[in-house]
Length: 165
Image 1 (cartoon, rainbow, N blue to C red):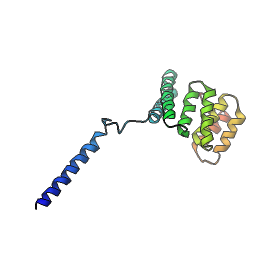
Image 2 (cartoon, rainbow, N blue to C red):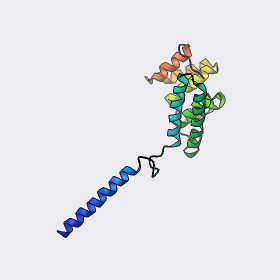
Image 3 (tube, one colour):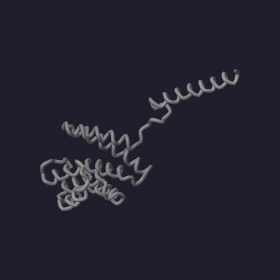
Image 4 (cartoon, rainbow, N blue to C red):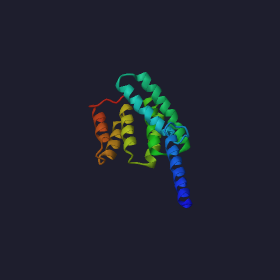
């Protein structure tokens, strides 16, 4: 009988601890739900794209700049991640620095030559810098992906879709 009571108490204590542990992470109180620099950057990039689509280029530029800062930190902490380098190239390009944007894209392609995002965005950069032959090379890499990025880049190269940088 005492053994049963003791086991019941232990189980209840375990369940109470589990409930408190599960509830403590939601507001970031213990830091377990804290977003990474990369995740913060992606959120800012999405926000910047929305601002761009509404013609609010100054607000977009501020978000791209903040996103770039988070991505630089992310790349220092975890270097040479293709997705990070893709967005570093993207934000850098969106801020008007095509030369360094291209460097980030090429660094990412050296790691993952078939990266869909890098190939699309690098192709856009090539169109923006009047290097259509290089944009077509990026399009060829995407030709078998069956992805929307292929069609987006194809439309930009053909002049059917305009890319602001």
